[in-house]
Image (cartoon, rainbow, N blue to C red; front, side, top):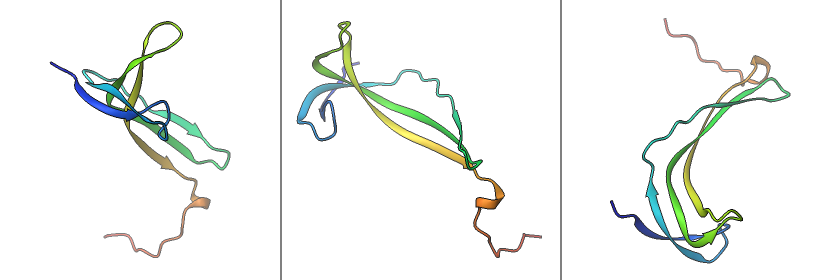
Length: 93
């Protein structure tokens, strides 16, 4: 399968566009990270990686190619009762 050629700002979103190759994800294991805030709220977050873009001619200090990721973040939360907005909705019977 040939990689799709793309242009992407690198290394930051305000950088000039660079050439790269979009590499589809073959397999991914995405686990939830749970964060407990001081106010008692529990956040559950995980990134869903959609694809990786290998940047032409860019390498890290070890010689590995540089990648940029297309990610869809997912978050759920559970807030303590005292932080929730009161609702006037009646329960369905």
